[in-house]
Length: 153
Length: 378
Image (cartoon, rainbow over all chains, first blue to last red; front, side, top):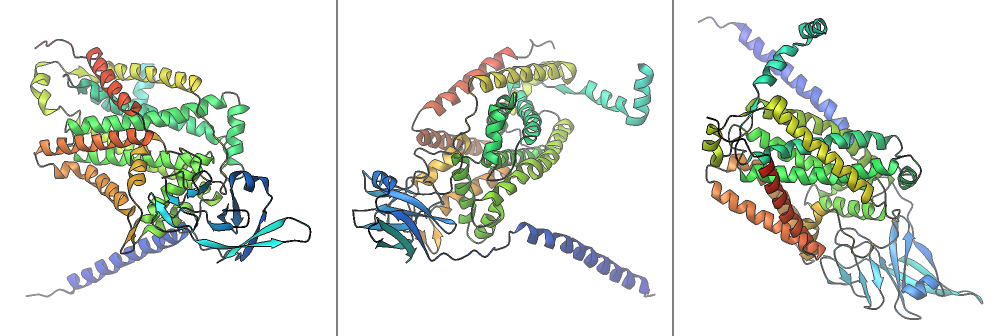
């Protein structure tokens, strides 16, 4: 039988062209896939913020306030005259922003009805985890109102 | 005139198209009314394209300007309110008619061979329409759109494994920000329209190639009746429906203009009774009912989310799964539909959604009577 070198060569060319085409597709798709995945942008770390004063009318009336902690919302709740608590205001269920219901003494999310007690524990509804707590310090200034200072716990 | 036509015919082959059109017929039977639903969905899609292009002339996709640009559009631009309201109403009616179209095709089992690909492409088009709804919702950058996007993208993030990547891919970062708005705008006005147009042309071509499906229950009836010529008779009926729909759109836009709401504030709690658009309410209500907790690192809410995904996949594959045992699929369809209706009513804490379903059935019956085929002539 005459074993021609042609099939051998044909096979090589098929393999070569096939992998070259595959490499071409990958070299086009890879940058696109990377391009559409947003890069991680480093954010300036926030250690503590001032969340206003204890005589803030909004705080007195509603019993809570949402403040910026870096790029994230933090809820500061007035449990009593001298007891303020702060938690991440992002609901652990599906990322909505929670509020405080003064009359029912609970932190509540209007999106899916998740509720948390004043220790941040998820007590009813769909949230899977407690709210991340923050530390609150009340700093009295000379002759001035008391400042609420929120920092990472 | 005839010389121009023959000149064009030499170059474009119009006569072949005319020949095809003149032979195209529509079978006549008592389920004829369902043949108009796809065309009606197409009409609302065309309205979306026209009004969407007009909205682009004034809209500015950034967190600082989006809300203000729409405010300017609806308060100062002549007929801006009209264009925006028509776009919003037509979007809702498009979802409604696409769903109605899907439901009728499902229960008449028109997805059977050789129309499996028509069905698959149609379900895919419905998902694309929902994608349009979701991405377009964010664009006005109001409170409702902000929270809807936070929740919607977080739902994608719940999926184990790929969730986090999907969340960042959708949001263009870790949070819902101006970057998300740019992304959603790109999806809404470029990527989704490109994909939708391609698949829509495929879907329409398949309808032309395979012709209208005759439900098995109406096969005998269709044989005794003379089919209607598509051109001009059926096309004119389609057209009169479209003109009626345009009137309804104008009336809705004028009498119930779409609200703009309040500008999104990423540092304000979600307002009371916040709720997504009606076609997402059944999922929203389900998510409300699932209690919180984790099992082996998977949160409970991931379970209904993955089940909805699975249901969507099953829906798409129905023609390949239905092996002649139609009853099971009809029962599954009825149960699925009942689940959606009950959850929607529950989500709104009202029976209005049920009344709308009943009214739709009544209206379809009236239209079925109005467009009933002529008496048998053979």
